[in-house]
Image 1 (cartoon, one colour):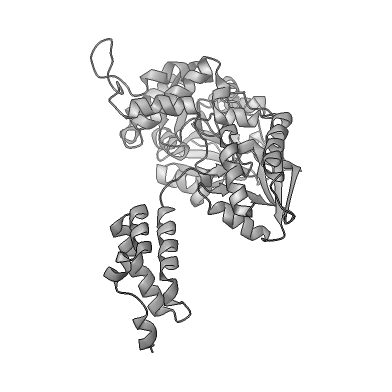
Image 2 (tube, one colour):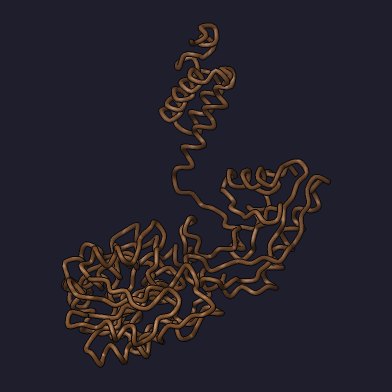
Amino acid sequence: MDDPKRMRQIPKMDQLMAQETGRQLARAYGYQETLQAARIAADQIRQDPGKDPGDIFKEIRAILKKQKRRHLTHVINGTGVILHTNLGRAPFGEETAEHVARLMTGYTNLELDLETGKRGSRLASFQQDLESLTGAEAVAVVNNNAAAVFLMLTVLAFERQVCVSRGELVEIGGKFRIPEVMEQSGGILVEVGTTNRTYLEDYTGAVTENTAAFLKVHTSNYQITGFTCTPSVKELAEEAHKRQLYLLVDLGSGDLGYIPGTDPKETVRSVLAQGADLVSFSGDKLLGGPQAGILAGKRELIHRIKKHPLMRALRIDKFTAAVLDETVRLYKESEKQKIPVLEMTSRSLEQMEQMADALLKSLEYEAGDHVQLQIIDTLGTTGGGSMPGKDLPGKGLSIRSSRYSVMEIEERLRHSEPPVIGKIEKDQVVLDMRTIFPGEMKELTQIIKKVLDI
């Protein structure tokens, strides 16, 4: 039963909003937003006897901050994961952002051929350069790689069989699975081989009159090691073409050969050179551009795909086209270091140690005895399922405090403005220098000082 005396301690809304704290919150967050938060806070206090009515402004402030965090905000990534799915994957460089901002705040020639004055293609600005970079006869672009695979199978294998190794029946984020994508596309999945060993004869032995293609899927988020076997792209292509079948490759990540430590046989150009008819890959994973699904390969197949009704449903918007255009330009003009994904993957240990040392020195002079800071070795990763099992050695700053637990430090960093996302390892909070932009260092210093009360 409600305590009448306790209920009377909760101010009326007009009185609460008229108080100085209420007016301050209204100026900071907006009158209606603050009023709504006040009503929510009052209801929570009424329903929870453990809440003190005298803390209502504390409750209102917490609600307003939580509501503000629902909106997208800039985050400092100290995880060492470059293509961090939860943090938006590939970041764009400042030059790219400025160029795209100019295009987005006005009109563009997205589908206008300026030479003829007639309607053109929204891929025209970058299509030829992307074909040159990948070695493809033609390319098509849709909104993500899952869409690219779906479209490829719908156009080329509707109501026909597609042979896939059991070791490549992957599930990606959000529980999207190759068998389910195949089913929705109208293709008929034929599983061949075993989880760890699939031979060329497993593919050829499964071919029937209704077979359309062999599909090879990059195992982007896991590795099968040990007693394994899988035929090469070249072997599969030769056998597929003998039987007048397609070899389709879902490469997942658009490696163009500029990432240290990647397999040169798995670049887009190499896979096409080995005989794949079509390759699908992401615009952001390794390529460092926007989220997009790129299909590269034979001109006749790309032409068929572009004519399919699904192509319009899955097409990219003007923002994606603009960012991809600028990303491809940076590759073409040998300005790849302006692409953050490439810069971060190639960042040297010396560079990262210098960053960590600068951060340490900016903090240690004012740090009290309750704070322990140390430069440590780290292991980052490309992320996004692009290079499974391949760590990127780096340098980071370790943070401990006798005043706050590791969990409290991590939470306080995450609730800062802007939020700082680190990682907890061996009872310490670690900020990996690989994924921190040099331009964020000054702001990061101030945030750490505030979080640790130094």
